[in-house]
Image (cartoon, rainbow, N blue to C red; front, top):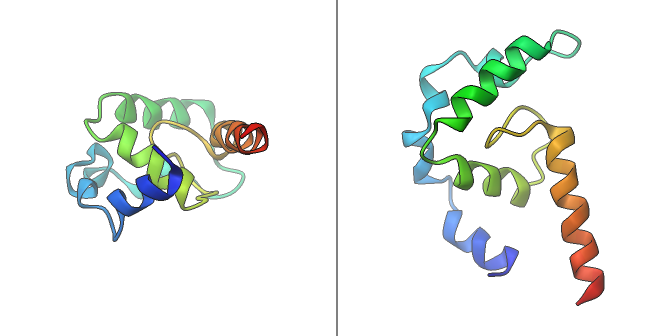
Length: 94
């Protein structure tokens, strides 16, 4: 399935968000202020994501919308960058 096909499935603002485990948590846990993020809070956020039924949809949404802030689908912006890099490599090979 192409990224464009996935985008069409998930837009407009995704309905899955109402089922996300993070919606009942403090946003600061998933979107820490610059310089305040620590491994403990990041691990807590990732643990919540790990138990979430819509983790995959969340990650795909973040990737398709070039989200550069916060933890989405259990991944930090730096971790998501790996997916973006792999996607660009795949496009070159096609």
